[in-house]
Image 1 (cartoon, each protein chain N blue to C red):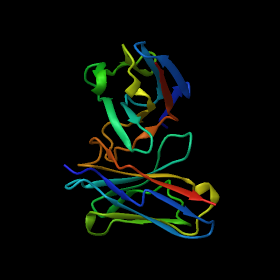
Image 2: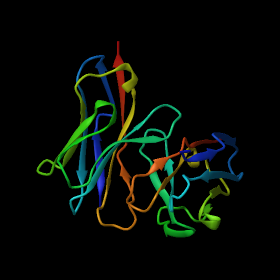
Image 3: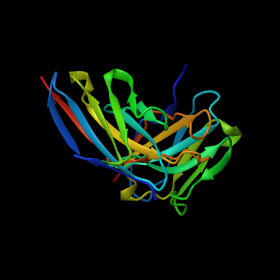
Image 4: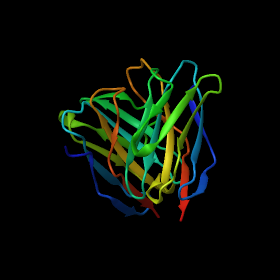
Length: 113
Length: 115
């Protein structure tokens, strides 16, 4: 069974630029999560999708972050414009249903200079 | 609100020694508890989870954890450390019965294993 795929693995941008991350969850997983992991901290949930609907985006900085999950499969997380404090690893996870085990992708390491 | 505290951002043990990683939680209801491991440049992998069944939970790679409600703790142990155990370990909590399954993570403990 293929795991959660993410791309790119690494990205370096300047502040005020925009960036997009892509996630392909495990086949059949209805729930998809995006986490932000700042160096030295644990992952923090940014947004949760159930199929193509948003379940929880209470911690998503909506003035600059956006995410979508068209057709309930792949998802894209965008940052526009980026700030220095957005430097982090962005992890995508999926689960069969909410509260089931979450499977994590390898993450995208973003550096904002 | 739920929270997780991991005592010690860095733990170092010798190969073959006991591994003990500490986790305390705060929750208004009996929670579900998890331990994840993260190897460099990789995503998180579930080691074990407590979901209100047996208080002693066995996981992969020889790890186990015990849920102690009176101490609000869920410490991770392994009797004998191996070099391959060197990684970062995260404790996480979620509210059972919730439809969302959101995980609240601790800050992590980096485990080093000396030969």
